[in-house]
Image 1 (cartoon, helix red, strand yellow):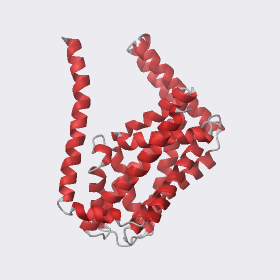
Image 2 (cartoon, one colour):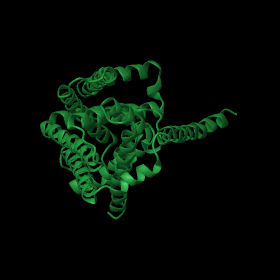
Image 3 (cartoon, rainbow, N blue to C red):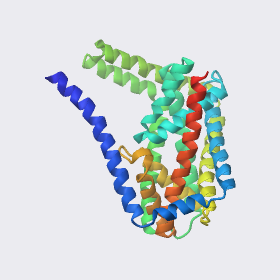
Length: 330
C-alpha cells in the first residue's frame, strides 16, 4: 500500500505541475489578449524589418559564443569551444522551457555524458558562471537606475525588493565559493549524527558534495576570473542589446537604461517555482506591469512583450535544435 502511495505521488506531482503551468499560461494570456487583438500581435510581428530579426539573432548567438568561451576558461580549456557552444545551445533552450531553472541540470548532464567530466566540476563551473551573471546583472541594473530620473513609486518599491534579492543571492553564491569546505564539514557531522552516512544514498551525496566543493576551490584558485567576469558583462550587454534592438524594430522609442531596468524585472520571472509553459503568460505579465510604469501604453506593452517573447523563443529553439543535432552527430 505504501509503495503504491509513493508511486501515486511521483505521478501526480509532475502532472499537477504541468496542469498548473497550462492553467497559468491560459489564464494570463487570456487576460492580456483581452486588452489587445491577436491581429495586432500578428501585424506587429510580420511588419518587422527582417534585417532587425537577423541582427537580433546574431547578437543572441554571440551571447552564446561568450557563454561557451566562459565555460571553456572555467573548464581550464580542456573542453573544446565548439563542443561547449553546442552544449550551451541545448542547455539554454532546456533552461528556458523548464520552470524554476531546473533546466540547469542539462549542462551538468551533457558535460558528463558527452565529455566525461565529473558532476562536481559541472556544478562548480555552473555555480561560478551564475555568480558572475548575478554580479553583471546587478551592476548593469544599478547603473540603469542611476541614469533614470523620476521613477514611479511602484517601480521604486520593486527596485528595493529586487536589489535586496540580488545582493542576498550574490552573498550566498560567494559564500558557497569561499566557505564551501566548512559548510561541507557541517553536513558531514549532521549525516554522521543521524547515521545517514552509513546509507548508500547518504554516502553518495557526501561524495558528490565533496566533488563540488573541491572543484569550486580549484576553479576559484586556478582560473582567470577577471576574464570570466568580462565575458559575463559582454553576455548580458548583448542580451539587453537584443531587447533594445527588437523593441526598436517595433518602432518603440525607449531608452537603453529603461530597457535594462524593465528587462531585469522580467528576467527574474524565470526563477518562479511555477510559471507558464516556456514562460508564456508570466513573462508578458511582468513585462507589461513594469513597462507600463515606465511610460509605455498598455496595449503596446502587451503586444511588444508577446512579440519579443515569440522571437526569443524562435532564436533559442533554432539554436537548441541545431545543438542537439550537432551533439548527436559527434
